Length: 182
Image (cartoon, rainbow, N blue to C red):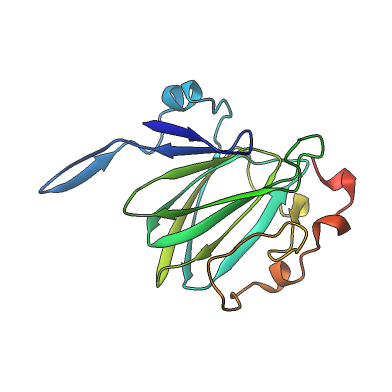
């Protein structure tokens, strides 16, 4: 497995070894010892899978106090995946990092607790996998508006994304009480 760091501390890009031949391929999607050696010390307790069509934007979501780290990847299709640093004492507070994830490369992205996370589907459809460090607590969920001009995420599409009502009504970063951030 190859591990790449990003300009924002804590965010990791993981490129697993793929063993392929004329029959198909095999890859290890998670091995606790290897991932701990890579710097991911959290214990994962819940796996999620979402299916979406092109243009669907999910996010930007976070949980507090039941914070979640996420190890994400795409099983089928392609997405533009984004994390926003919500750690108020971080030198990169309010900054974002994004990358394309797809089923061909099988790249994984680790988003530790303290970040808002979301993605937009750039292929016709996408099957997206989340491995989480805490279970989902709907009463603890927070969100950040996907197009907050202060954050300035450069989404890859010039068309208006398809959003849930909850995501469309998400607050700007400056509207989120500091106590709700990390």
